[in-house]
Length: 305
Image (tube, rainbow, N blue to C red):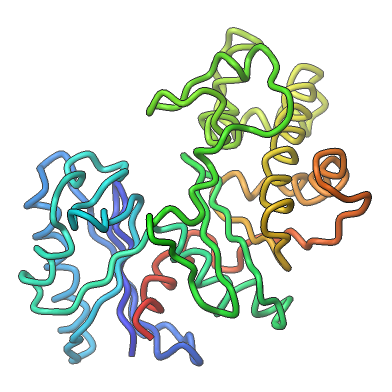
């Protein structure tokens, strides 16, 4: 059996699956992260979650995979780029190993997503012979992971898949040149393709605030302003995907996160991407994830297999 943990900003989810070959779920449980109570409380909550799972299935694990936004700095062993501020700069891998008396492997949650969808999800189900897979999460933020021949690819800088931080390809319009990511980068893909990115652009155009779900619904209802905004979103998404295609030319692109639920994306990107790639045709399948929000925790369980 394999144990995985998805450490998020609001919830910590644990899952046990039978094996890499048999993804049957043995148990799943969630607890609150309680980030506002500090780093040590998060450690305690992970400990209580693991103990709950082990007690309920009467099995002790000697190793544990964890997926979380951010990555372990290879130079310092400290977590960086997490959206849970209390975890940044902390030796969470070392502390959890000592607290749980287990071998711990921590990976970026987008890497876990890509691994799960490659081995257990949409890629396995629809394109089992795919070797070169790019997995994208478009939600509150934008991240990605990359697998080759069913193995997660993690480079020496632990930056593989940090595609959302790249500048959006193509000539930038006035708005794109004005928008900064929280790190100060101008025109980063994340600030346009994320849910908050769409909401901010809607607010810029209309001086009104709407949720991304409401904007999409207005578009589907025929609202002219929302139609223009969504067409701009589709165009920016196609431009952003072009950089993946031009560099990696993946066999499959698999999408997860809240924004991946916009079904129109899967029709619009192929129609709009060709002017931005080095080809006059586009044959890469773009598919929706099979496991949705559960892909990350499943991928975390697969890290040690």
